[in-house]
Image (tube, rainbow, N blue to C red; front, side):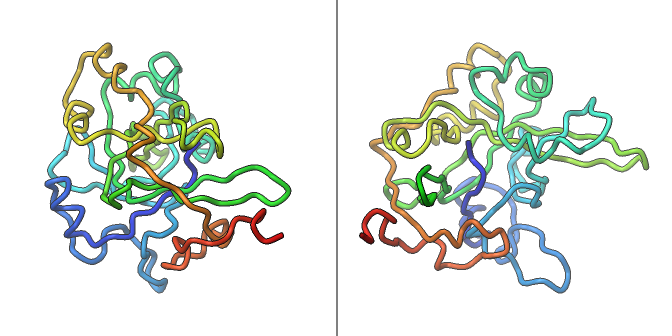
Amino acid sequence: MCGRFQLSVKGKEISERFNTEVHDEIHRPYAPGKAVPKGYNCAPMQWLPVILNEKPDVISYLRWGLVPFWAKDSSAAAKMINSRAESIHEKPAFKQAFAQRRCLVPANGFYEWKKGPVKQAYRFFLRDEALFAMAGIWESWRKNDGTTLQTFSIITTAANSLMAGIHERMPLILSREKEEIWLQENDLTQLQSLLEPFPASEMECYPVSTAVNAVARDDKSLVDRVAEQGELF
């Protein structure tokens, strides 16, 4: 699965990489009176920057955790932060969004945890530390008061060889040449051909502090390399 990721860059970098309009400093919303998010610990139910297929030239801010347009309420959103590539074309919660409402989720890293006596967190990233896009789907859900809630889900696929030793799933990372296809293509067969694990040879990973477990933590120390738990003994 993908339950945390990193987007710790200025808006200018997002704008240049994805050819979108975005504020240079504050590239995701924050609550008044709270610190400006630094993007080292993006978590479910937060409002985060994504690029929608219907508005690819601007950054949109959607809440992470999909609420299908037909849902009676939004209670299941936290359980729909991910959608499986293998069944996305047939699951009622995802299939219409897959066909009509797709998005790119910018990131420069993501986290996964290795099971054990103490769960060890790892940071995964591209070898050149470049920004990349995770494939997502999005929805607009109308509340009882008539207002609209827009949400998204990150697609996951089987793990590549780098991920496999840590977790069996990974986010669907798109190569740069596939990003435009993901946003513009309407042929479902063509879209399904994109649902493949990203090459392990183009990625790296290392262990990080379990401080990333706390959603309230959001600072550069979260991406510092640490010794694996097993290396301490």
